Image (cartoon, rainbow, N blue to C red; front, side):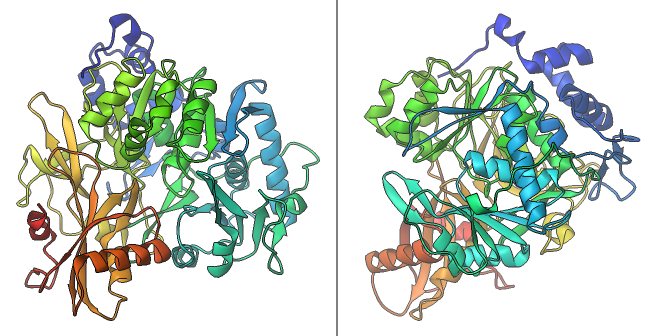
Amino acid sequence: MKWTPDPDFIRTTNLWRAMQEAGFGRYEDFYDWSVTEREKFWDFTVRQLSIRFKRPYDRVLDLSGGPEAPYWLPGAKMNIIDSVLTAPPEKTAIRHASERDPQIREITYGELSRRIDDVLHSLREAGLKEGDFVGIDMPMTPEAVIIYLAALKGGMPVITVADSFSPREINIRFGIAPPKIVFTQDFIHRGGKILPLYEKLKQAGAPQTVVIRTVQDGPALREGDRNWDDFLVSAPQPLESTAADPMDTITVLFSSGTTSEPKAIPWNHTTAIKSAADAYYHHDIRAGDTVAWPTNLGWMMGPWLIFASFINNATMALFDGLPTGEDFARFVQEAGVTMLGTVPGIVRGWKKNEKVRQYDWSGIKCFSSTGETSHPDDMAWLMEFAGGKPVIEYCGGTEIGGGYVTSTLIQPNYPSTFSTPALGSEFVILDENFRETDAGEVFLIPPSMGLSVKLLNKDHHAVYYAGLPKYKGKTLRRHGDYLVRLPDGYYRVMGRTDDSMNIGGIKVGAGQIEEVINAFDEVKESAAIAVTPPEGGPSELVIFAVVREGDENEWHRKFQQAIREKLNPLFKISRVILTDKLPRTASGKIMRRILRGRVT
């Protein structure tokens, strides 16, 4: 299936209007300008997004520290919250509903601002000050969004943890970036099930915790913990945002690498600009749009959704519940969603659920898909289901703040393909000998706004730059995706080349999974790999293991149970393969490509 934009439609898009204002008639020329004249492009973009400053920047980019350590908007004083709350106060900021209460409710930008001030005032009353970390481990609800923005307004970086993680994983993350206070819920409500959340925080040894009650007879609180209603104090007057440098940390997100400890990636005020820019140019989000994306603040798409929606003066649609069910499908229709983001696994759920098909999604302008490799048949079904609408494939990472390869609404759209590098982002595809190729590993070419410049718990240079050659005199940055450039110039992402993977839309390190598997006394060694089916589609988790005894079915059950309890219940093992030994290099590194070749 192919979607071709009508010329009249093209002229209505943010991207087309921006191109005309910048003096470009062809998208290809506009893209080239975005990477050859980076300062001019980002200065133009900051003005397109109406980003507000307490003190204007002296220049756009300072490269005195080299392309690995760019300083964006030097001399400026800002707080990204001032660019989030610019829509008229009577405009709807959030539409929300849940499985337990399907009635759609609305929060205006004016009410959102007042509630943010109430939470910020309450944080200060609780003794928090600028620079203190605030933890959030809860579903993507209006309260989560308000807490997040309140902390940012007060200059308090937010540590976000996905609500699906085990107590052990919560403990690891809060150990890397210890919050002074944590916000959570008593329970998660999904698909009719009630799952404990506050209890996991207690088991994780979380610090002082504020609990939002969703049921009357909830768990007893630890000494020092507080109910949300007891914590919240109304602000006596509107509060000013805390002035910050553009590169100051606003959020710490976690993205797994090749070891058992996740990378702690700080986002700064300019990362939010990157997120909003991708939404503006590539997703055509603007005032009048309603944007939904089933996500969580512990995944980069949570903060992305906040900045993508609010900086562009759109309405954010939040549904607390199972995104594959009938209730969500009804919510999309009744909330008037115009841009719907997803992951391929959710699309498969919609496709299989006959009840979803009774709802009218023709009001959707476009979809977006990220998090894992998609299957063309699934995306073609989605396009057709909404009456012939495009799917913006969107691939990037937490350390990018958005995408490096994506699509647009002014170019033809084909299922599961990308039409362009993201504006302002540049990359090259290289083979194992660092020669340019049409099928190989992606290397980013810095600088680009949004790219991380530090890690809290690892050597940033060692992770992303060490050992890489120059490419035509340009610095290369390691990323790890396996990308194919198609004959028509479009792209397909075919998974990961390193030891990290996307399982169920969540990035996880092979080492994290292997640590759980190797905890069994009978397991000598193991290797976790992600395998993309030849026809495309989401990666499947395959475990190779050397064990003393037992069969594959028995170990599949044991491994799955251990991963569910100790890591994440969303990680599903597709297959367990028992072997006598694992192939390794001379230095002892597991040769995962050989293992992938054994999976048939």
